[in-house]
Length: 107
Length: 120
Image 1 (cartoon, helix red, strand yellow):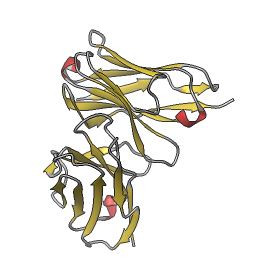
Image 2 (tube, helix red, strand yellow):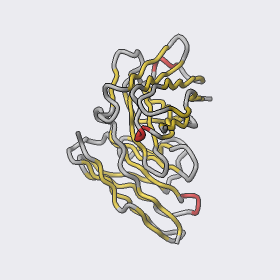
Image 3 (cartoon, chains in turn cyan, purple):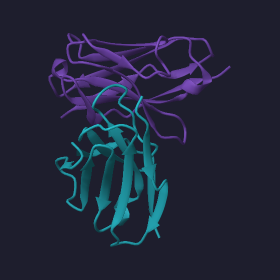
Image 4 (spheres, chains in turn orange, brown):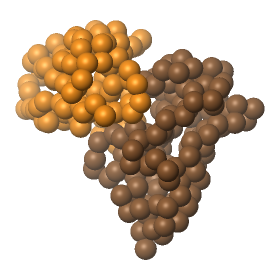
């Protein structure tokens, strides 16, 4: 099975900062990658699919890039409401594995 | 409005069985893949199982293969997860999640989850 890694596992940044989270897969998955945001005590929310397509209603400060094995999620202007854990997920074929998550908080 | 309502969670002894249900509304249920995703206390998300819109294709994580069975009743707009031979490590909140088309498994809507606790 394809292994998923995310880095960093956690980060602390200031409001207004640009934040980048990396997701790597052990084999190429083309652009079959989604990103989710899970706020504390809440249900996961889809942010991005097809590696770079923003889900409807998601603020434009979120963006995604990458293809193959290396992907990034960028928050361009970190806001207090962005405090959450972010997960990547592959969906090219089963198992549709999630990454281990990156916890983002405000410095 | 899309709604997913899970039920059936609870406390069960190791080796026991439980059946989860997810009642769906607000979309054409048979047109979309569905999955179960779980989250152990304080841990990350783990995809458990998925079924295509027609129900003809199913997939499982290795951790549950042979013990869990996913199914759906498109006439009742309901997704199921039959869980047998439960282990302590199956303790988690189980979410029902809607795929974006009949056989694509990323998820645009999630239920609120149902807690399964496996303990003696």
